[in-house]
Length: 97
Image (cartoon, rainbow, N blue to C red):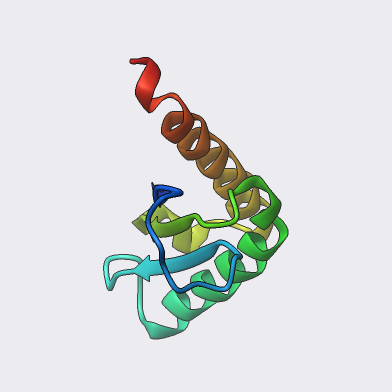
């Protein structure tokens, strides 16, 4: 799984709801439509539980890799949590590199 995170500047005025936004990309490489939709549903449910990790104005894109098709909900949840935390830490540390 790969997570891309965008945290807009505070000075930039954007119309948003003030809550993090998360989108999902599950390509045909993951499997047939039934498998892809299962992965999307599991990721959507897992992401809902991890919104508190993200800053309020954040936008995240989660890209599922082919092994996601065989993963359980617990595996996806754990992987998503790890990826989101890494992405937030990376975004916060951009100025320090």
